[in-house]
Image (cartoon, rainbow, N blue to C red; front, side, top):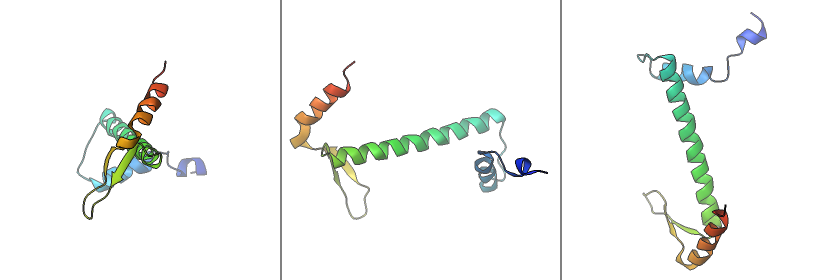
Length: 94
């Protein structure tokens, strides 16, 4: 076996990890591809949302409040509403 055969394909570790965590699971190719795509899409959306929220808070469009045992809450910064509306008009121009 040469080095090309010993290095697993990029997603092989993800699939094997799933089966090791769930040893009694059986699935079809389509099923495996489906949950892999869903996991990737969810992870991408979470990362994009986190980046967007950080930008909106940093630029003052949203306010972030944190509590002791609760997750952060976000709300529109009322003092920047007109600026936020202007930004949306610019961003939504065709």
